[in-house]
Each structure stands twice: as structure tokens, then as C-alpha cells.
Image (cartoon, rainbow, N blue to C red; front, side, top):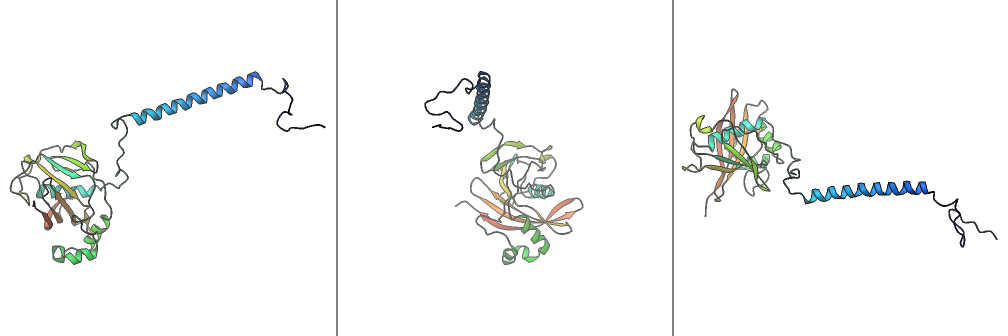
Length: 250
């Protein structure tokens, strides 16, 4: 009886010299295995080095990096608000939240047309298209960039804390503008903020703007302001201010 074994050797029989793997093929196989092992070792070493590297070496992964940045036209509004409402000749630093706020106060509900009508901001005089634009733009936060130009150093604060980069405007504000009085205090602290800005809303023809800013201070005091601005040539001026909330020390 003949036993046929496909792809193998019959039991009890040894492989003939012709069926054995040639030495040259075996050498190539070993060379390939050594090369693959070397590549794998290099990859594992690279991964280990990256994981063991300090955070400063690795690229900064911002949790808010995917958010839409605030547009350039908003910063002229922010600058006007900071200059007119918060800066004094003693101001040395302004702290700003990195992300725009989407609500008009702590624990306040999301903004809507009904919300504006219910609260009667500015006695209901706001143009309806201005309110609509403000609501649409503040449905989600945007990321603020180093585009402020109010003449004083400013620093961003994010969820991770105080960011290391401090931006400096070219000319100190004390040399350009008179020292306005703060809405909340008669004394002039060297640090302003933490300021939280909303996105700015605009009328269809771009002659009016609406923005919210909250001033949350380290001592627990602060206030929230809704500001109505009008365009005067190439500049903006604050037409009216509505104080929405005030926090006082207990």
C-alpha cells in the first residue's frame, strides 16, 4: 500500500537531501528576519523615548485646538471694551479666558430670542438682526488668539491654568489714553480680570455690535456686562451698557 502525504513527508521516512531547504535560501530567510527584528526594535525604542520625554518636548496638544478661532473683526470690539471699561494708568496685566463664553452669566441658561425678550435688555431697543447674529455666533465657544491691541500685557488662561505665553502690545496704554475709571472700583489694581468675552454680534449693515464680557476676579467679586456699540467711521464707540450681574464678597 502506498501512502501519499500532500505537502509533507510520509511517516517514518526522512526528508531527502533534495527536499531540504537550500542553504542559500535559509541564509536569505535569516537575513530578512534580522532586518525585521532591527526595524521593530528601532520603532519600539522611538515610542519609548516619546512616552518618556517631558511634556515640554512633546508638541502641545490643546484640548480646544479644534475649535474655530474668533474672527479678526471681533478684536476691535474687544479692544474698545477693555480700553473704555477696564484699563487705568496703573494697569500692568490683563487676564483673559482663552475660549469665548456662550452664556451671559454664571449658571444662566443659553441665550435665545425668548431669553432676550424676557429679560428686556436695553429696554428692548436692540435691533432684532443684531440679537439674532449674537445668538447664532455664541452657540459654541471659539478660541481667542493673540490679536488684542489695547496697549497692555495680557495673558490667556485655559482649563489647564495660566498659559506661559504673555503677549505684549507695542505701546503702553498709559501713554495713549486717559485713565478711565473702572465700573466697579475706584482703586486701580495692577491686574485686570479674569475677563471672559463672548463672540461679537453685528447688524446686517455692520454699523452696530453687541458683545458680552464677564469680569471674574480672584477675590470672588466681579460683574457681567452686555455692551452695545456703534461704528463711528473706522472706529467703534460704546453706545450703552447693561449690567447683568454683580458678585460681591460675602
